[in-house]
Image (cartoon, rainbow, N blue to C red):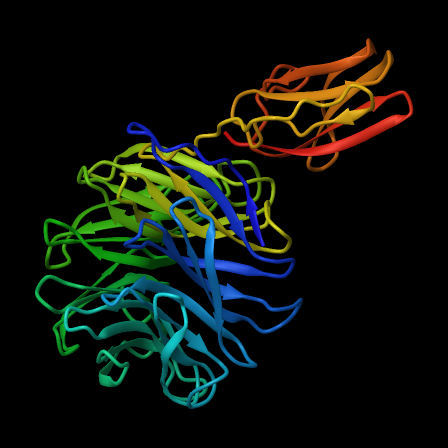
Length: 485
């Protein structure tokens, strides 16, 4: 099921398409990766739960430029299977990297799926041993093959190592490498570099300043180590994404407990070509923030996606940060409702905006649903009003507010067949009264009330889900609306 969370802005010479969409069912669906495709649409990878409490399958969604579903596919067997990463391939198909508990050598194995342009399977491959082996990120390489990174456990109870697998165009193994020490290391992201080698983003307990540290590995085209670096403090740091930058260096996004404003903060590290630190930045408030994806932007700055508990509408909210080339904040945005909303991936789109994928419990069909946000260059999702039907005043009627969702002001319209005592009350998602819009006798006809997003004391309310209730004589009805700040 596709649920539209925000309305589409018509495309003009000066406008960008923006929207928020959810995809899923009454069970659970999670988005972990998004990329703009060559046709202007998007490909999203993640996991889907086929029934309540069921094992997950790898999940692939193809949308058009407006976020409308073109097709969806699931891949897997009777156990847990997951897609962490997907990208469009040179033949207009897709490659998906993740893990499978259904197939392979036993336990969990790295899972690589090649599809055609319709998402139909061409081949699948598994890599690993009898225990815990996961793939986290996949990249098509310049020779038409693939590179996938994750973690490898050589035997039950053994510490895990970063696991790098290079394949040919049909998924056949060219080489595998593991990297690590006597403790736990996890690979999270890989990018082919301009010299034909690879940069690997990971985190390590075996090396560094203490606790867990960001672990960056530069390897050559054969997977042999060129250099490694660690970054962090005495506590807990993780890397979740790395990309080579236009100056030949690297940028990483993750989170830090050692530095920042409190709890965990988003942690971004910019290095030169040899991994030496150019600058580091943390972003967040007094609560927890986590960074999961970063991309260089056309102006030489960066855009970072993650989630925040310090800002937004409640719970965790999707958190988008735009910086300049030095990592200084240009703007920040939050998206979501009263429940938890997470971002896992971001891509810079061809129109200069951004597309973010994750999952939401605030909106959608139930449980967690895949959450796709398309913004303009300023990180904004524009909301416009749909054409509306005129209600018939010969009967009681409460119409859906317009626009919905809204950012500043929304109109609530209702019809009365005769003069009636009327009360219209606004409630938050917990059922607490926010404001009484009107109370008194009103004549027959169609009426419109405006709500400006303020409570009874004139204070701005937070983004989230609200309800409005009409009581008129013996008639009452309640409807739901969404405020986006």
